[in-house]
Length: 262
Image: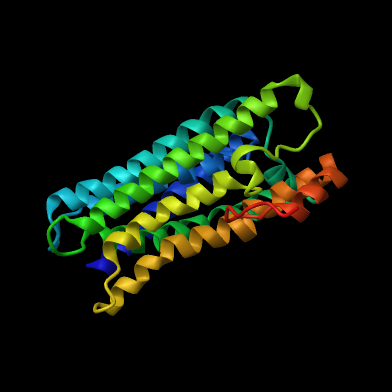
């Protein structure tokens, strides 16, 4: 049943990402890829978590895991959707417009479609957590604590950055206060932390298949740390802040919060 559900997620997300590609072409804004991926991932994985077919887990656990996915999608989707709708195209996607305009649609499709299998990998963790056997207990409580802690931390980090940017006296400076003094990307760290909630429920060393529940935190760490999160943002900051940002890099952890170096 695990394989069938994950394959179902993959098929559904391929349809979502083709729609994202077509909508982005029509609006001339590749940023809609992120919007469609967020809402599509939240909806498909919540549905997969609730699927009762062959489930040995209590219904309360399936609803808990589905609620995690719904909360994740609402938080990220409500942030991304108005931002993409009201801003110019993100530099990451605008870069794909350079070169032959005739090949742009194919290049964007190559960028958009791989996000469907990424969701399917996340689905391994979500489905395993939702279908974990046994009564609701301390593992579920740990998952709730991790998830709420991640929501809280990401909210604090975003609030600190918003206040910093809202102060005209900080224009041209680097944010290195609060959580941003311990990590250059605390919002990404807490976003990743929330995905540990699923192996917290599912992982059972006596059941080898449950090691696949580590797929979601592994995939999200790879994406945030090495692909679509940290690298393009730091490149942009180096161009706009120069030596000030290099100094910040030298004294502050890139991802995991650690005491700043002197």
